[in-house]
Image (tube, rainbow, N blue to C red; front, side):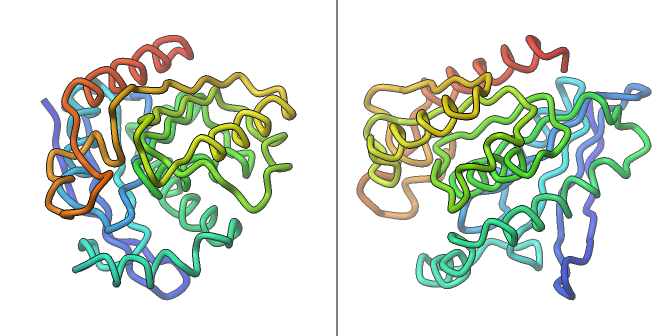
Length: 238
């Protein structure tokens, strides 16, 4: 069992509202930072944090839009994400703010920390790794793989896993190839799992609500990618 709570924190004058989930057993525990999908923090991100806590991890689902709410539509999401996409420093600052909240929890073992992310949150988790953050593992689910500073992959100390659907229109094969070249050039311990027939947001049961082609939940891929994450966590001693 686990206990959850809401944590508000400030990033450059904006109030972020994240979701903390803590195992009921005494710590210290390994910890996982959870970065939400592009539309904002929602039940998907919160439930992933709760699920991790049930497995014995302290998990914090950060908020990188502010207010702790999901944005109302695609136009609002793109207006918020557009300025972020090419700004590696800003993405990393938002990620580090969430990581600071997680590391401040007394139940956390600071030597056993991972970051995971979904959609643009996966991009954020990868940028956090590129910043040189002291992470044991980083996992991106249907995550954007591009970066404006691929040379910073040399700073990565974590083992990297990205889980990508082959039919994801937002992550074309060329982006996967560029990411492979980036990881190889930096000699990172990395892996990319490709899931046939899976589209974007394959982990989110509500993905179909977007009503957009190429965005759909896939139960088997969701389960398989989660197991891949757990295997990586076990490998690094999380």
